[in-house]
Length: 242
Image 1 (cartoon, rainbow, N blue to C red):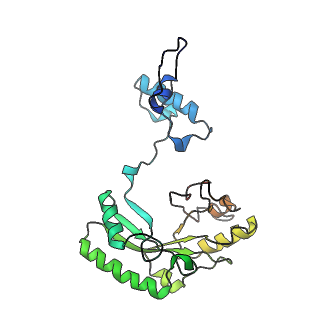
Image 2: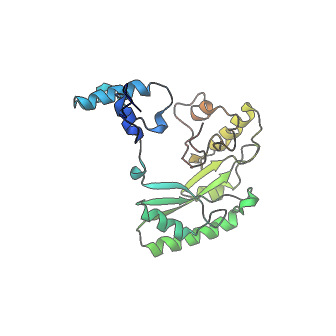
Image 3: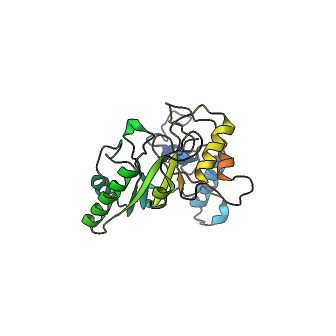
């Protein structure tokens, strides 16, 4: 970034460019042209005159990687992950996490060697053993990424789901259903009282796969309900994509 005389005034970093323009740095996740530029200008002015007040309407503070305390979606070599439960727990511990949830895929996803009711119960025994071995340094919780079937039923029985610490559900097939069909399918799945989380709610993989057609507003704020009925958690390839 150069001035009128061609002298470089910014450009080594993005932060430099924003500062030269009189703007606070805008994190990439906030760059949606929904008022963040104006908010960045207010934030910059607030910092310039050292007035720290919530009434300035500046940029929101994002949750950073250092703020995370746990990971709610962890796959292992029981299915399509690369490492063991213990290895994943130790890696999480090294990153400063306090807990992880093991959420291997279920039997409908045969290509991942998904878990059926018998195998997931066997996995619980290993989780108990690793928790004991690590002596409370990190908590390993028992979970699943349970497949949502075409009709909205789930790939594991309710008795098994009810014994898990965390039940996540997700769509891995029939992406071409109509908007109404896909919405009804997911709504039925998350209406199961054992379900805690809806993983990757649009199915999008950035630059690889478009989202399936679904009414996200209806899933989060269903008609006749006062509160959200689903949650989503981040996954690098598209859980928080739209």
